[in-house]
Length: 151
Image 1: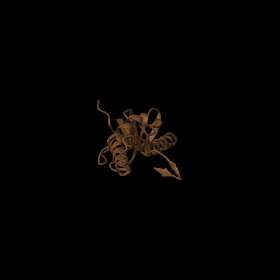
Image 2 (image 1 turned 90 degrees about the vertical axis):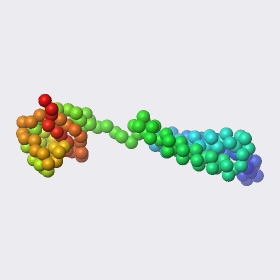
Image 3 (image 1 turned 45 degrees about the vertical axis):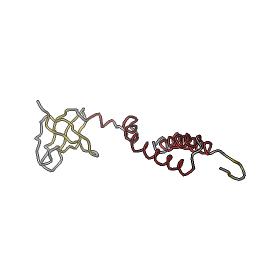
Image 4 (image 1 turned 60 degrees about the horizontal axis):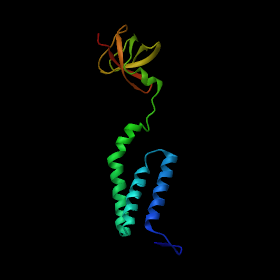
C-alpha cells in the first residue's frame, strides 16, 4: 500500500489500527474498542500472508463483531463494568420491623439497621401490619421492597 509516496505493508497498517484501538480502550475502559483491536490483530496475520485487502477488511469486521458478540457479556459480568454498588445495597436480605402499616397498594414504614425507610410489600395487594418482622427483597429508588420474614 502506498500513502503519500511511501510504501507501507498492510501488516503495519493493521498494527497501527490495533494500537490505536488499545489506546482508546485504555483511556475509556468501556470494553468497546478492545474487540476491534483483536480483529485488527487477526487481520494483521492475514496481511502477513499477503492476502487481498478486501479479505483482510472482511476478516477484521467478522472477527471484531464475533469477538464482541461472543465474549463481551462474559467480560462485563466478570469486570462488573457499569454497576456501582451503594451502601443501601447492603440492606437487601436484612430483616427489620414494620413501624407504620403497609397497606395494599400503599407504602408504609420499616426500620432496618436503625434507619426508618419507606417500604412497599413485594405483593402489592397484600398488607403488612405494624410490628411485623420483614425481610428486604430489593430497593427501588428510595423505597424498600419487603416481604414478611419467615419465622
